[in-house]
Amino acid sequence: MSDIVETFYLAWENIMGPVPHRLLCSWHVDKAWRQNLTKIIGSQRKEKQSTVYKSLKVLQTMSSETEFNQSLKEFSSVMKNDPDTKEFGLYFDRTYGNRTTLWAYCYRKGLGINCNMYLESMFKSIKYHYLNGCKVGRLDKSILIIRRYTRDKKVERMVKLTKGKSTTKIQEIKKRHIKSISMNLKINFDNNTWNVESENVPNQFYIVKQVNNEICCAMVCSACKICIHTFECSCLDYSIKSIICKHIHFIALNIIESENKLLEDLTSNLFTTHPTPETDVDVTVTSTKINKQSETEELEVHMKTLGNPKKDENIYAKFNEKATSIINKITSIQNPEYLKVAMQKLEALDAFIDVASKETATGTEFIKTNIDPPNKKIMTQTNFYSTKKKRQKIENDLSKPSRLETRDLNDLFLNKKLNVLKEQDVEHSYYKEH
Image (cartoon, rainbow, N blue to C red):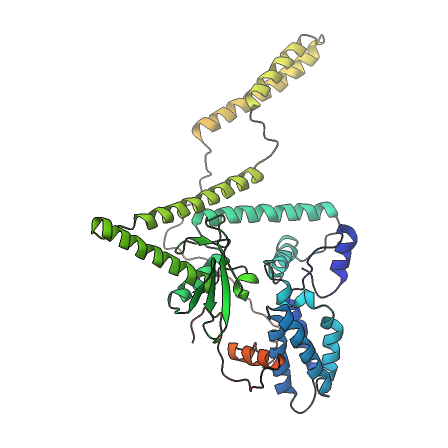
């Protein structure tokens, strides 16, 4: 994944060779589209800019390659036939029309990457936090800074693992699980594959397929007892963002419910008593043990990499060997002056060993500091404020299309019908409405 500019990719390809998948950051593509929408002119340019931007987002998020290619041709012809949007249409064909595999979602399904924000965040942290915004001309200093950054990140990761802090993706998975609990969708099951009806678009189904039976990674949902590799879904949430979507959660909850009902029926027929949820407890304990084991293994790996690889475990044996060799060498010294100098060195070494042994036995003594009274006030710090003029916010009327708008634009591109864009509805929205 690279920026829209060809400089970085050409340099990489020249040294490392071509790559099977080259992608453009979706955020940079979106930013370039917003900036170049000013090429649309006319008395109704605001309305046309909004419609064109929503059409671009619909094109970008299409999951079918056939529908995408057909819609792209329709969009390009509409842009060129309108004199107000002709300049933008020429720009779009020149910059993106012949490079659809770099920015369209239908060509990056299953790759697990959509934007390079993590890389840019790392670059910004190194540039301003570790380099203080200064340029570095020496390669060895740059390598030292990068190693220091990786060390700090390992320690930060160890602290998060110890505290049990959830990652961003785990939090997103929990949001989708909560959303799936209140869902009531139609399901068609056939040959280990489920067709799950869309929550907002009628007669649209997502394909969910089970590919694994065991938890094999740390990206898990503890309530559904599945990981990211247990199921696959055809929605953008899973195929593009690599997150356990609400459709997978819905299927997993239905499987758990059906298994519990079957267990209750079998137990009631055999013992005529209500079953105890021992099976669920065992599975939950097993998944918890797997998570704890993976976290422990990751901590051990970080501890090993943070430690000194040249550390000598047999330091005492080597010290004794070195002392014996020194004693053997002393007998070969004939000059008494040299022996006096060696004696002074040995006395200094003996004093150092005495201090080190006492420090090991009693522990390090901390320096005594003055104890301030508990009601003493702290020194007030001078307040600083910026003297720069605040930049005026530019109002932006551009917004992403809603679910209904996306459906209508799809029908428009595929020549199914002409419809006016209206109402708002979002398929993958997991936040409370205000």
